[in-house]
Image (cartoon, rainbow, N blue to C red):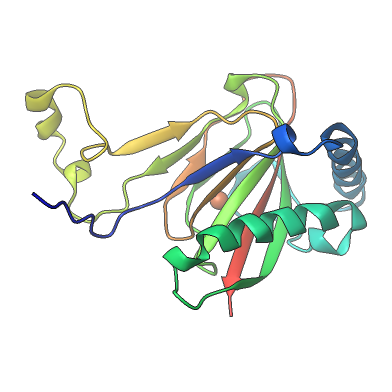
Length: 200
Ligand SMILES: [Fe+2]
């Protein structure tokens, strides 16, 4: 029997540190730039609760040039899933710094087809997970009694999926997929760079 997967929701993950020989130097340069920006600018308030979020023009800073290149190359590997003729060619990039108790509220990225995040500083799992919520209207999410009958969930029946990022991880997901970041429970800053990518 043929299974047709309708309206599937992909999330892609790889690790930049693993295949970037100068990752430690690149990472250090990006973190240093973010530190300078955080001292110099008040930051913006969007999804961040108390955490610091930069303007979305990090691409203006030379330290992020190589990262933009990597992001766009990876994005274009999955571009055919969004459009047979599509090429991602534009994007916005911003930094998030979450310290103890800081988190990012539930949100989507409505201005982008494809969004994602790169994790520059993650020392412990309890610095904050990213959790994605089921995007399907009328799914088991709204019929929780299913779980009491079925016991353990399956990918088809899942209502929320958490990912524990590690340093160097990069995630890509559709901009419409709801997600949030759990509170940082440590005294170490959690630093990530998020992005929106447009297909023009
Ligand atoms: Fe986000």
